[in-house]
Amino acid sequence: MSLLNRMTLLAMMIIAMLGAGEPALAGLGQPSPWQLGLQESASPVMTDIIWFHDFLLYIITAIAGFVLALLIVVMVRFNARANPIPWRTTHNTLIEIAWTIIPIMILMFIAVPSFKLLFLQLNVPAADLTVKATGKQWYWSYSYPDNGEFEFDSLMLKDGERKEGQPRLLAVDNEMVVPVNKIVHVITTGSDVIHSFAVPSFGIKIDAVPGRINETWFTATKEGIYYGQCSELCGKDHAFMPIAVRVVSEQAFSAWIEDAKKKYARNEGLPSTAVASAQRLPQ
Image 1 (spheres, rainbow, N blue to C red):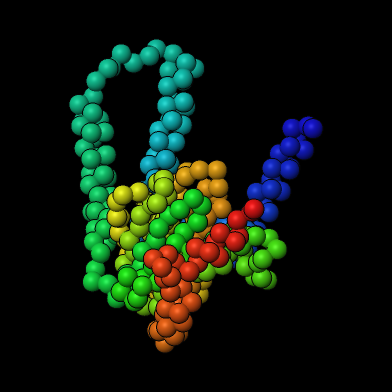
Image 2 (cartoon, helix red, strand yellow; image 1 turned 135 degrees about the vertical axis):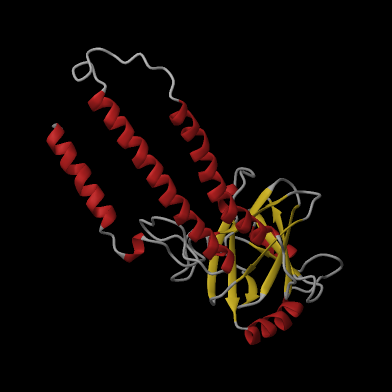
């Protein structure tokens, strides 16, 4: 293939990527085809994360542009043809002070919103609801300590089990259900190895470590289903333990809790879904 044909093919690929329309940007609750950038925000924390990402992008672009301009100046002004007798100056006090002070000021400028965002993520406010997520090989189990003695497993749906509209490798049989506009306190642990509970549209990601309790929080501002995945390399089926969070109205959540108390009630110290989960495993 000639150089011209290769350049034409590359240009067509770039145009196709840029011309993909709205789906090429961020999706709400799940990835979109040809997606560029972060998923659409569905929580205050994620809104701040997106703002901070864009804020850093402007700074990075300005620095990269400045360095590129310096490189061009050096190549034009200080090549052998334009400057046959090289300068013998080895120090410039003003420049050396500037390239020390200016990066420090830039880092301080970045630090203020960075620390604010970290505090927002790590300082768990008074919660309206607590959900315990336990990472297992390779699925998640959920319990609601404030709402009764029940627990259920959440396993990925296979290709033949998914309904129309449910995303592949993300849809599950039993979703984690939470009410909209309520502060949800999520505590995580692992039953075997280290997992990681992550839902991009909520801006949360926290390790689930065996023998330890970690915590995070979110407030879902829109109803819908939001997907995530285990973000820790936890074993051979790491890619097949998705997270699905269904956000519903407060009334629908209350009704779901009453139904869940019966459907997932513990029997003889074990969750009722333990039997159902065992039936899904290959014999």
